[in-house]
Length: 134
Image (cartoon, rainbow, N blue to C red; front, side, top):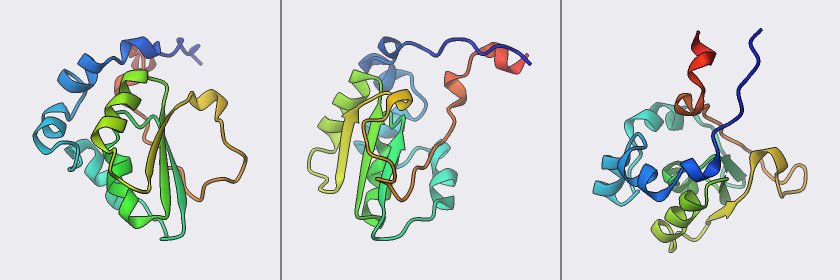
């Protein structure tokens, strides 16, 4: 078994990355974050939530998935360890009532146990080091 490399530092996920390089950025810019990029549509369609659910998305990036899930649940909180991601989310979805975004690291979640009924998690291949595929 190979030893896992250290994760990518949060500062590498800056505003420029999210708006000019991160997969789906053209779609995000064209639709102001109101439409899911292709890479998330299949994942989203498989999610099962209930109207009373409180949901946590870990690694929310630009927030498109949170925005899409919001009408289906009571509330959703998106967290990311990138300050730029959270700033983009807060700017883009500032008028979305039941969607909140918070700067947080998944290794140290700032929530009590059993606070959420659902936690969709999509492993981002882009964040995996190349050595994982050797």
